[in-house]
Length: 353
Ligand code: ADP
Image (cartoon, rainbow, N blue to C red; front, side, top):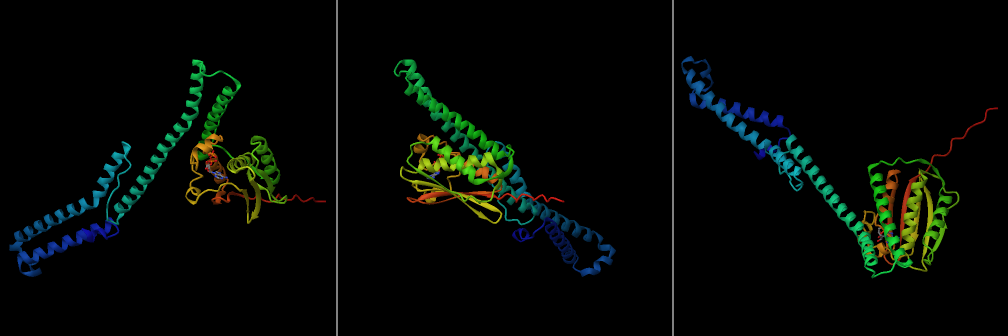
């Protein structure tokens, strides 16, 4: 059987079984009649010949059944595993040493089930995370409302302000989740055109100054005026820049600096947002673009963070065919960089005189 497993196709396996069976039959005929191959000319020994044929065929049949059983075992295992999957159990794997088509199918099946298993795990994590994130502001709002109703708290502007902030957080979270799910499913068409980076960066920097006043963080614009335009959706690039700058300003302590720079490459432009904040440890670096991943949960939440800003940034950049990455040294700051395709130079219209 192990020898058969080494054969790469079902055709070669069946071929070898048949060759083996025919060989056995000839050997039996030879042994039973004991007269060698001249028997084929001897009529009176016909019954013995028939008997040898029947025994040979029976042996071939038994061997063929045994071989077929071994060959189709992975198929039965796969059917069983598929039934289990219907009930949500994705842990099933099919074991086979066979290298033929069934063996290849089993390998593909195992790959598919581990893919499904990790998707299912991600789905569960997502539901758990979303519920948890929604629960926090809802519980806070409820507690304030109960206190107001019981007369423990007074509806003074301070309390109402806290409640307003919680409901704004809820709204922001739901908006961002919807945006992310649309981006990931490719439902939002990109309205791409030539986007000049220098004015866009200046615009986002002034918005950040308004949105996060009194942080004591210096904002520096180091984008060269002659940086080539990118081919992108302006609103979306604005969103990525805003998310990166908002994070940089939120995580950098007072007295620090945040710098936006840009550099041209062959056919693309890199935009970098560097800060002098606390940096990100190597183990967190690879995970910060995952949704809801936060190095310091409570701190990010207190600052109004939802934990999906970077996931959105990554989806937007990747939808443009670009990439985004982060480099950081704990204690010395972080630099988030994204790369977008440069816009083709405008076609010059020639005047004919
Ligand atoms: P959040 O809403 O929490 O900012 P993000 O997806 O934007 O969510 O960021 C995920 C996490 O990455 C943050 O919670 C923070 O721990 C880390 N992070 C992002 N930007 C920076 C930065 N500039 N410096 C240090 N940590 C950062």
